[in-house]
Length: 297
Image (cartoon, rainbow, N blue to C red; front, side, top):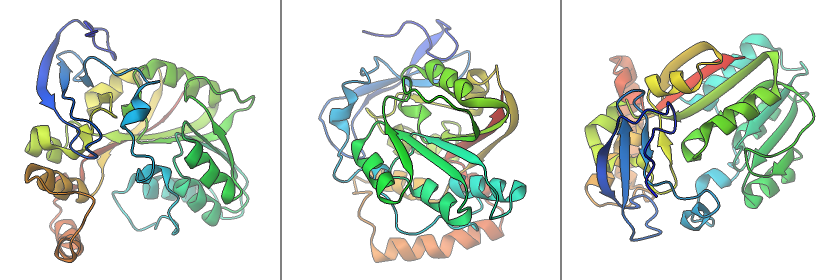
C-alpha cells in the first residue's frame, strides 16, 4: 500500500521522484520500485515500503560485504571515510589506554568495532545487528554482540558513544530507531551516524543509476535537510558530507551496465591515481556520497 505521507515529517506534499528502478546492485529480483520525494523535508523514500520482516530475501547473504569482517583495522588517514572520522574523534578525547563504553547499532561484521579494539584495547564494546552471520563474526574476535531488531533489543545500560553507520537508510520507522538512541544515551553521550547523501554530487549526476539508491534494501535516503528534521530533538555538533570516489565509479559502471563488484586492474589504478589529485585540487564534492551526523541528546 502506498504511503500518503512522508515518513520523516508527515507532510502530504509528496511526489514521484524516480519510477521503475531495478535492483541494480545485486540483481536479486526483476521487480521494479519507485522513489518518492517530500517537498517539505527533502526525504527520498521507497513507496510502498517493503515490510522489514520481508526485505531479507533481497540480501545476498553469502556476498553482502557489510556482514563480513574485514581483516585490517580502518586506517586513520582516510579524511572522508566516516569510520576513520569516528576513530579520530575518539582519539581527540582519549588516550589509547582509556576506558570508555561504545555500542555500534547495526554493526555488520564488526570491522569498526575490531578497529576500535585495536586502537583502544580497554574500551568496553558491544554490537547489535539483525544478521546472525554478522554477530557470529563479532563473537569470533571477542566482542559482545546481540542479534536482534534494531528497534526492540533490550540492554540495561547507557554508553559513552553510540555509533550507527549506514543503517538508517534501511529502516522504515526511523523514529523508533531514534527513540532507541535516546534509551542508550546519557546526557554526555556522543552519537555518530552516517547515511548515503541524496544531495551528493554522485546522486545528482547519475540520478536513477546512483549506487546508493540500492533498492529494495534501502527505504529512506537523506539529505542534510532531511537528517536535520529527523534529529530535531537532538543537539547537533557536526553535520558534513563525506565518502569516497568509489560511489562515482560504481554509479558510472551501473550507467554502463557493468558489474560494480568486479574491479579491473585499470579501474584500481585510476582510483589510486585520481584520489590524491582530487584532494590536491580540493575537489571535495567528489567525496560527498555520505552524510556524517554527530550530536547528542
